[in-house]
Image (cartoon, rainbow, N blue to C red; front, side, top):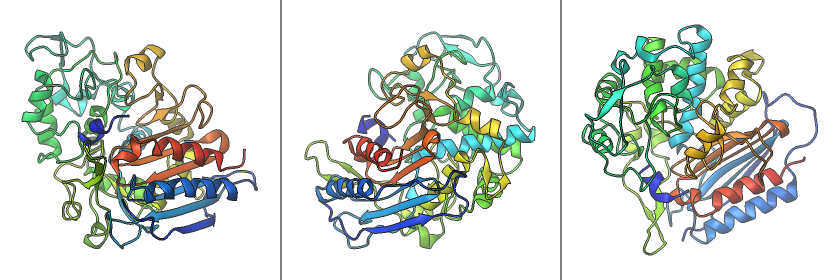
Length: 429
């Protein structure tokens, strides 16, 4: 991955805190197994070394298998600061929001308020009668009619015909990209946020043509933005309220939201990225605690949530349990299967290029491994967040790994890959 795409999306290690043990409501599985002490020690040493070298400011991470959970905190909230990372530290999730939004969408499908194969026109008339650019870098008025409407599943699989452009550069100054920027649609980076309400955002977005025919290609990000608006209209209530009632409340995710109580927002870590010239981590502007202390005008389904490691683990465990939480079914097993199964063709995976999909498939709102790698065999699912977060579930081994930082370079300096590899190696086979 390249840091510039996610932005456009020497700290002391501090005190390390560890919690290990059984968690009520964990994945149903045979007893025994779980993280290995020697493997966990190797993982902690590797992550602590990166903090010591100034590659990361601090992090909270979790490795869980078969009901056994290990959590570590390393480093500080601010570079050179003395406030340590805590288990309950909130983090900006950025794109780890996408799997949550996809699960919420499937709840509405299960309710009969949405259908996967239905055109979105019924609830999003702003997107009816789409036109498609004749060439990606062409003028907006050089377009042809869309061959078919955009469906709900097109949004979930990121095949709606619109998304981020990564080549020849990130979001090059093509007319369609410039027009979205001028309308303040915030199509790429989480910050600065769009000032528009969901209704105004979709109205403005609806004035643009698509980049490709619906269903043709996988393109990142836009599908999740549109899903946030679709959920509001299908549910008949604000997105934040729907998530709180149907997902966060039942799962006990009390510290997750598009905004945070002022006391929790004050504990958000600083955002850091390396200066390209010096290689030193520097504090980044935007997404301040004050912004997080008030609800946004547009709750972004692509990158708008903040959460804690325990809250996101509750969501992860709910998926590993095939939609059941503490004996209560919140989502059908079939819905979870569709969320976590690849829906792309080999050609669509190839056309997506090396970034950000990296040869993986795509389920609904998350990546799915389709070939064996050094972390797992096929079937692992999860995703990353552009401010330095990563998560995956490996259902074959009943394994979850979550790492939360606010150092963008975590995704680009090899730390993410090292974390995933060592987390997978730290468990019983």
